[in-house]
Image (cartoon, rainbow, N blue to C red; front, top):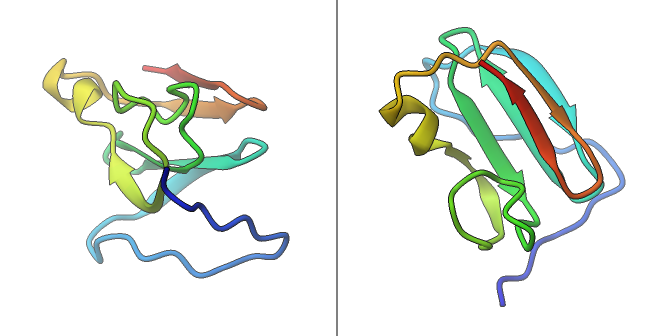
Length: 89
C-alpha cells in the first residue's frame, strides 16, 4: 500500500507550469483542482476510487483524470466529500 502523507498545514503543490487553477476542493484525505482549461487533477487517499482514476490507488502527486478528457468533458466545478468527489461537467 502506498504511503500518503497527511498534513494539517498548507503545502506547495507542483503542477505543470502552463496550468492555471480555477477551483480547489479538499476532502478528508484527498484534494481536487479544476484548471481554467476544464481539466480535473486529483491526489491523496484513493481507497474508495474518489480520485477518479478508475482504481483505488493513492497518490501524493496530482494526476489528471484522463477518463474525463477521453470523453471530451470539460469540468466546471468539483466538490470533495469525506470519501467522495462530485464533478459538474
